[in-house]
Amino acid sequence: MKYYQISALPLGLLAIIALLVTALVSPARAGEIKLEAQLIWGTNDEKSPDPKHKAVDPKVEKKLKKLPFKWQNYFEVNRQKFAVAQGETKKIVLSKDCEIKVRNAGNNAVELQIFGKGESVGKISQALPKEELLVTGGNAANFTSWFVVLQQSE
Image (cartoon, rainbow, N blue to C red; front, side, top):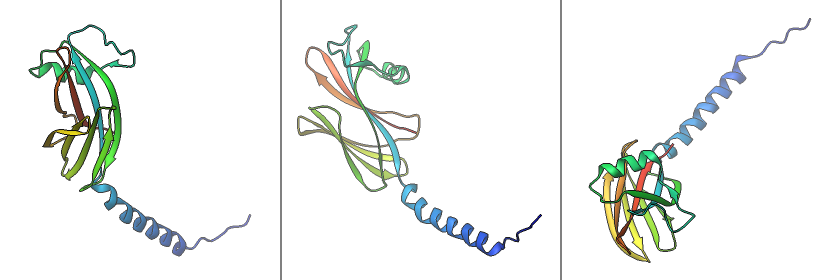
């Protein structure tokens, strides 16, 4: 039986290289925040007239129903997951009429700007810890409403 002697030098060198690569990659991701944006339609109608709309996630619906909104039903129009590095802004299209710009302000804080039909309709800055929702919206036709819900994703 042959025995091979492995030098600790190459293994130690590999460990040092792995640590250096990790150290170089980690700071770039350290300030990144992973988010999920939802465009939601609020109504008292039992069903959405658009068959592409889905019932909103029960966790989001529960939080929306705790807010002082008058709507009985909420439907998801679109959902987008994305990541934004600290200090950067990302533009997300949620529908042909709705897009958002999200800036990562650092420390789990975001700045959300909403555009409806190309016009800015609102801007809000807020801390966004995990499990919290940032909810903003406005009125729509036929006594309905639209909402943009922003939350951290995994």
